[in-house]
Amino acid sequence: MLYSSTSRQTTHVPLERAVLKGLADDGGLYMPASIPVLPASFFERLPQQSLQEIAYAVASAFLREDVPDQVLKRMVAETLNFEIPLVKVEKDIYSLELFHGPTMAFKDVGARFMSRLMAYFNRDKDKELKVIVATSGDTGSAVAAGFHQVPGIQVFILYPKGKVSPLQQKQLTTWGDNITAIEVEGTFDDCQRLAKQALADQELNRRHLLTSANSINIARLIPQSFYYFYAYGQLQRQGKPLVFSVPSGNFGNLTGGLLAAAMGLPVHRFVAATNANDVVPQYLATGIYAPKPSVQTISNAMDVGSPSNYARMEALFGGELEQFRRRITGYTFTDEETRKIIRQVYQRHGYLLDPHGAVAYSGAGKFLSQTKEPATAVFLETAHPAKFKEVMEDTLGEAIAIPARLQRFAEKQERIVPMQNSFQELKVILSEA
Ligand SMILES: N[C@@H](CCOP(=O)(O)O)C(=O)O
Image (cartoon, rainbow, N blue to C red; front, side, top):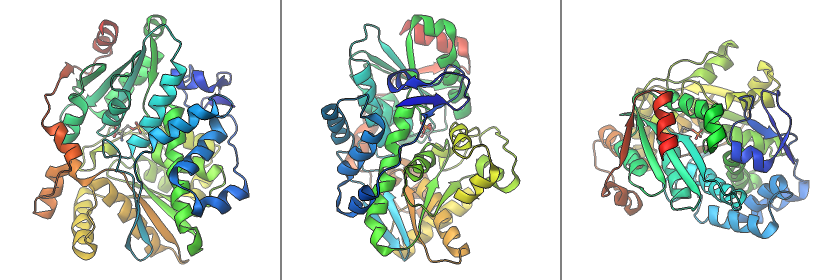
C-alpha cells in the first residue's frame, strides 16, 4: 500500500518512508493512496470480537504488505494492553473511556502503536532517529512513555510554557534518558510550527534522521481508528444510528473516525466539539477556513489555532464544504459552559467528566436535542479528570482522587530545557543532543 501527500505535489511513498519522515516533502500530510474497505463479514463479527482482534484486523488492512503478521500481532497486543470501557452515562449517551493507558489519555493508543512501528522500521538503521513532538498537554507524555529507553531513538518534546496542567507538565518533564522536554516561550501553535519547520529543514535533514510523533504522522492516525469500530461493535444491536462526539483540537482523533467511516463503519454523524478554539466549527458555519492564534482554555489539550488534520479532512472531502457538512456538525463551548456541565453530570449521574470529555459530552447532548431521529451518541472521553486536578477541584469544590499512575509522576524531579520561540535555538538543541 502506498501513501500520498495531501498537497499532492510529491510521488506516492511506501509506509516505511511515510512513517520515518512524518511530513511529506511538499509539506503535506500522508494519507493512504486508497483506503481499504472492510468486508461485510468483518462488521457482522464485531460484537463478538475483542478490542485486540478488531485492532489487528483494521491494522492488517493497512499494514500487511509492510509488516510481518507476527510482528503486527505483537504490536497490537502491546499497544492495547489496557481496557477501553464503553460506559452508559444516561439514556442514549455513552462515554468511550480512552484514558486507561499508562499516561491516562487517548494518545496512549496512537503513541504506543507508532513507537513500535517506528522501532520496527528503524531496526537496521545505523543513524539515530530523532523524533520531534509538539504538545498542548497529552501527546508529549504518551510519546515519551512509548519511546522511553528505546535504543536508537531520541525524543524532543516541545510544550508551551505555563499552558499545560501541573500534572501534565510533570508527565512531560520527568523521564530523562532519551527524552528531552523543551519548554517554549510561546503557544502550542508556536511549538507545532517549530516542529514542522525542523522536519522540513534541509540542513537538519542532511545531518539527522528526523520524524514527527504528532498525529501528522500516519502511524498515529491509523490506530486512532481502532476504537470507533470497537464502540460500534458494542452498540450495533441497538439498531439506532450512531453519532460520535469528538473533543477536537488538532483533529487527529476525529480524522481517525473519518478513516474508520471510509473503511465502511456506519457512522451517522461526527460532532466536532471544540472549546473557544473554534476554527473548524466556524468553517462549517461560514465556509471560511481561517486559522487564528490559539487562546488558553481549561481544556488545554484542545488549544490549537491551526489544526494540522484539517488538511486530511479537506483531502477526504475533496475540499467540498457540503461534503464536510454532510459528515460533521461543529459545536463550540466556553469554559463556563464546560464547568457547568462537569458539575451537572457529576450531580445528576455521578459521572466525572474531564474538561475535554465535558466539551464532547456537551456536543453529544446538543446534537441529540437538535436531531429529529432517534440516535445513540458516543462521546470520546480522552483524558482522566485527575490530569486537571486544579480545574476539577475548583469546578466541583471538592478534592478528587489522584490515581497512583499519575501520582508517581508528581513525585519525580523535572528536567526542562528552556527555549525562546526561536527556530535557531531549536536547531542547536537538536544538533547537540
Ligand atoms: N492535543 C494534543 C496536541 C497535539 O495533537 P496531536 O494529536 O497532533 O499529537 C496534545 O495533547 O498534545
